[in-house]
Image (cartoon, rainbow, N blue to C red; front, side, top):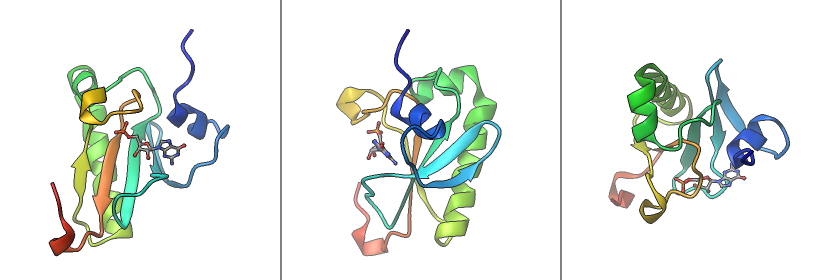
Length: 114
Ligand code: 5GP
């Protein structure tokens, strides 16, 4: 059996995490290494999907829930505008193979890169 992901361990309380939202299917935590004033990870409670391609094909409704939670976080923690980033594959900077969305917000316009 494979080890639980780092995010599942945070969800289960084995590792500390700063939770900012939670529903039946999703949770959101502050990224430990923030790349923007607001940098939150939106994560399905299930770790059965390793990336957004798998998730979107199998459960588009859950994907839509992730986008809605991202928007809610951007409204609550910034001005409602946000970047939504999914890294897909090790060569695309994915390090945790339990699908998650990076929500970046509160970025000054002249500091926007990428
Ligand atoms: P990826 O590179 O897979 O797209 O994103 C994984 C993210 O998880 C990284 O931005 C990294 O900073 C974050 N991360 C890794 N370990 C932990 C942890 O223990 N706690 C939190 N809150 N974030 C983590």
